[in-house]
Amino acid sequence: MRVVALRALGLGDLLTAVPALRALRQAFPLAARAVAAPAPLAPLVRLVGWELIPVGPLEPLPPQAARADLLVNLHGRGPQSHRVALAARPRRLIAFANAEVPESAEGPAFRDDEHEVRRWCRLLVESGIPADPGALHLPTPRLPDELATARGATVIHPGAASEARRWPAGRFAEVARAEAAAGRAVVLTGGPHERPLAAEVARLAGLGSNVALAGRTSLVELAAVVGAAARVVCGDTGVAHLATALGRPSVLLFGPTSPDAWGPPPHDRHRVLWAGRTGDPHADAPHDGLLDIEADDVLGALTTLP
Image (cartoon, rainbow, N blue to C red; front, side, top):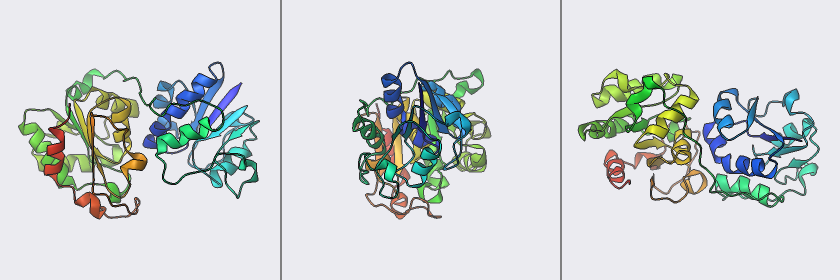
């Protein structure tokens, strides 16, 4: 038997689908399982016990995904993703109902106000497959020796996918400076395109350039850095979901998107700061609610972490 899950999105999207992927693995333990997702996510997909079929958002699925016994659309509610899935001619499709795609008519109803983790678990449950939304944990990858400075550090991730979700660099620098002054090691993470941002935060904080790890880690090494940290400070990003999956205490800054939809599950190791206002998460300027959060708010939340 072959099971394919479509989740051709980013890091945070993959991590919110982990409980659903884990449920499918438990329901079909002997099946060949593959997630259709962007190639860089392969190491984390393997941590969940799946293989990866490389594909970009809403691209046609490659031959490896064709004629699966079961294809689960964890990408969206359609119609575009439904049609991508159906074009692969699976024997069975599990997907949310969409009036524009008759083949999905018997699927569960989509709910706009549902948390992303619970959404995909409910899709499975209402399709006859038990799923636990709390099954978010990932095993922590080994921390390479050259990244040992991250062990026990405060990890600060200043980047985000859009300007709307990006807290100002100067405020991240205030937090980094205060953490360093308190005697805590600080490291700054990010992707290759975020190297200038991490360097700016390090400079404004008066820290050496060696603390900026942005662009110097693979995705699995980034997970190892987060997993080795004492605590994590970041916005509404994939790193926030890594902190949840790896059980690291975190302070998370939300702006245009409600944490009720994308935040961590209630737990004493996570602190979510949010002004309570939503907006366009893809806007080209920081959301007003995000700007309402001051560095002192973050520092205060850090003092309450376990």
